[in-house]
Length: 161
Image 1 (cartoon, rainbow, N blue to C red):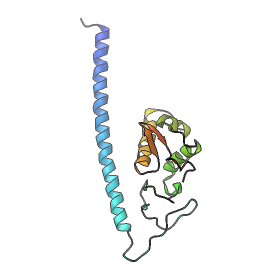
Image 2 (tube, rainbow, N blue to C red; image 1 turned 90 degrees about the horizontal axis):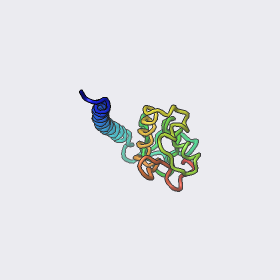
Image 3 (cartoon, helix red, strand yellow; image 1 turned 135 degrees about the vertical axis):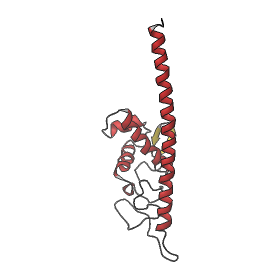
Image 4 (tube, rainbow, N blue to C red; image 1 turned 180 degrees about the vertical axis):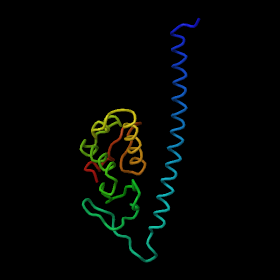
C-alpha cells in the first residue's frame, strides 16, 4: 500500500506538470494575440497615413487632443512613445499605471505592488492583468523593465510625460 506522503507527492507532481502545460499554452496564446494586435495597428497606421504632401498634426502635449497624432492611431490601445506624446493619449487603465509610477518618483515597482496601488485585489488574475499592461507599455517605450518584473518610468520622464 502506497504511503500518504507518496500519494501527495505524486498528485503535487501532476498538478505542477499541468500548471507548466497551461503556462506554456498561455505564453503561446499571448504571443499569437500580440501578433494580431501589432498587425491591426500596422494596418491602421498604413491606412491613417496622410496622402503625399499633406501635413501630419504635431504630437499631443498634455491637455491637448489633436485630431490625429502620427503613431497614436484611433483604437490603438498603446501607441509607441515618442517625444511630446502625452500619457493622456493612452487608454485610462494605462494612464493610471503610468500615473502610479510617476507618483513614485522613478521608483521601480513589481506587478503586485502596482495592483495594490491601483486598488485592485492582489490575486493572480488581477496581477496578471497588470503584468500584461505594463509589459505592453514597456515594449512600446512608455516604461522600462529595469530587471525582470520591476517596472518604472524611463530616466528623465519621472514627471509622467
